[in-house]
Length: 279
Ligand code: X90
Image (tube, rainbow, N blue to C red; front, side, top):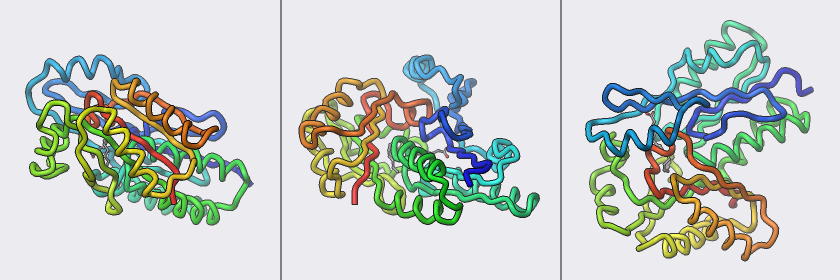
C-alpha cells in the first residue's frame, strides 16, 4: 500500500534528498542587505558564511509560503510535511494551509503536517522515520499516529557560541542573548516543549559543553538510540561527541553533517545541534 507517498520537509531539516521515497525540500530564505540566500540544494553555504562575516547590516529570514509548499506536492496521494517549530517560524502554518487547500482541490488525497517543535537534526530523524514507516507499508492513519508519538520521544539539544541572530530577529529575549556575550562561553540547552530555545546551562569551551550535552541527553532518556549531529564549522566537536557516545553505548546509529543555510545562520559559527531518540 505504499502508493504514491511523498515526504516534504522545509530546509531547516538539512535534508536535500532521499533514496527510496519521493522527497522535496522547501527552502527558507536568508536576507542580508541586497542579497538573498535561498536555502535549497544550490545554496552555497560557505559563500553565505563568508558574506555574513563581512556584512555588518541587518539580516533576517523568511519561511516558505503556502504556495511554496503546494508547488512541491505534485500529484502525490499521500503527503507528509515536516516543519521547523511553530514556536519560532510560520513554516508550519503555511504547510497546514497548503494541506487544506490541496485536500479541498483533490478529494481523497491526504496531507499530514508534523510540527516538530524543533529544528535541524531532529527533523532529519522524523524524515527518516517516516521513510521507514512508509516502506513498511503501513496505512496512512497508522503512520500519522506513529510519527506523532515518535517526535514526542525525540529531542534536540544544542551548544551555541552566539545568539546574535536569534536576538536580532526577535526570536529570543535580549536577556537570554546576553548569556553568551563572553568569549569562550557556550549556551547549552534544548528545544522546549513549546518549540522555543530553552537554555539550561553555560559552559566554558567545547569540552565542558560536551559534558553538559551528554548529561542532558541522558536526562531526556537517551539510552543508545539514533543520534543525528549537525554543526556549523565545528567538525571536531561533532566527532568528539560521536566518540563519547559510542564509548558509552558501543555500536551506535549516528551521523554527522554540516548545517545548511538556515541552521548555519541561527546556529552560527561553532554551533552544534544534536537530534536524538530519547524517552
Ligand atoms: O521563519 C523563519 O524566518 C525562520 C525562523 C527560525 C528560527 C529558529 C532556527 C533554529 C535553527 C538553531 C538552534 C537550535 C534551537 C532550536 C530551538 C527550537 C537551529
